[in-house]
Amino acid sequence: MQMTPLLTFLATIFIALPYVQSSLSNTGDINWWCNQTPNPKPCTYHMSHIPGQEGTKISRKQFLNLAEQSALDGVVSELGYIKSLEPNVINNAERSAWSDCLLFYNLTVKSLSKIVDVNKKSTAADIQTWLSAASTNIITCDEGFSDVNVTNNIYPLVIANNVTELIRNCLAVNKVFFDQEKGKRHKGSRKSFPGNDSVFGNADCVVAQDGSGDYETITEALQASAKRQDVSQRFVIQVKQGTYAEYPVVEAEMENVVLVGEDMENTIVTGNQRGAPGRTLMDTATFKVLGKGFVAKSITFENTAGTDAGQAIALYSQADHSAFYLCGFRGYQDTLLAGSNRQFYRECKISGTVDFIFGDASVVFQQCSILASKTDRGLVITAQGRTDPNNPTGTVIQNCSVAAGPDLQPGVTAYLGRPWKDYSTVVIMQSFLDSIVSPEGWLEFQGTGSTRDATVYYAEFDNNGPGSATDGRVKWPGYHIITDSSDVEQYSVANFIDGESWLPDTGVPFDSGI
Image (cartoon, rainbow, N blue to C red; front, side, top):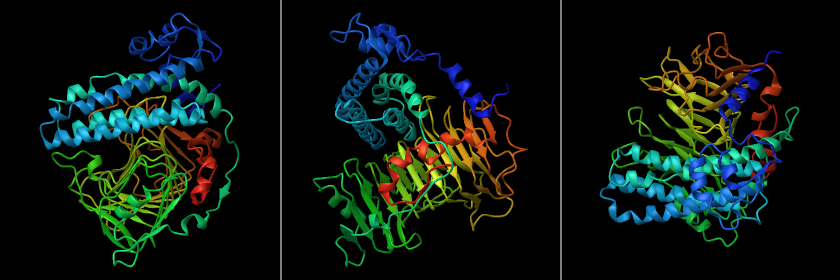
């Protein structure tokens, strides 16, 4: 029987993952379970002396619970150590990377604490998402030192730990529960959910540059949102039209913030930070979102650093259950960083040049306009950052359009993506691809050669337009032309980001299926 592209991909991953594939009913002691994980040595080191567990046979779920607590303990310990390194920070570049690491380790503690909270009803998908975000946080901490070209002094001290391996063990163990849960998910035709405008009304505060509102800056309004006693309730910030030159941050504790502009073209948050000595990639972002449940509507985020500025982010989001509706994202290289967790973008306009949609979130772009901007160099749309085959992450582009922006000179072609990391995952389906799309479609990442051609998952399904022809596409083992809708059902809004469980509360319309 000939295998479908999806089955071929899954078989490849299965072969690559000889660990923790044992039955759900298996039992064993901690040493036995550790030997089933991808990283048995740190597992055994951290877990073999847990009081009351030596030689005791436990189930997969019991082992997972202990492994998650062990990972949290390791991160908390490492966070304390990183804090203690402050007297060793010798310059601004180190301080920038060190400060980012503090943030990312704190966010990791928050993610892992949710997982081990016995009073919290979490699905296997929740746990896999939060573990993936935790792993990405630690990796991003490490990469921050590369951003500022710091490879000595405190850098070896910061990365000299194995917490990432502990988290990846948890990802591998929980994957069995995640796959079991995934088998019960939504199947069938597309279902449209209308938006709910009431979510965006009844503003808690108004931002207006002319002083006619409650605040003159978005940053002040966000600070007001943090003073709420109950962050489970929506806090709606209405932003009057204008260009706001500031660098707002929706902090992790600022949950369920709703930011509503007057319209995409006339309500703009602007910045021009670029990659520079002493500045990490995250520090270039005009707008950062860390708080869960963030929703934005009718507003544009831009970074005007320019085509020669290198990496310069307009929006950085790693907020779980975040949604953007009728929003604009303008930049050049690295316009939009969907860093981690579950995100959704509907009827947005995204423009850029190189890797201008990137990161390692589980993210769906639906009915968006993706525009390639003026550049003297090559154009690449996506650079997805999946680092672990067990991460439930990837970039899905559904019912969107990919075309040239108004400022792009004729004759320039764009690639749909290149594999930033080993398991880069991108699915483009039911979208219009204009003639700007290169016949090859996909590009190898500079310096990696063909090493990632077999481990990526790049797929196209049911696209149209002059750039959608697939006969000239790359012949990589990891590239797939899908013809059966059942092979892409797992990438629907309902299945990939569990959208039916949380998107209705955001007020943003969406189509749940294929």
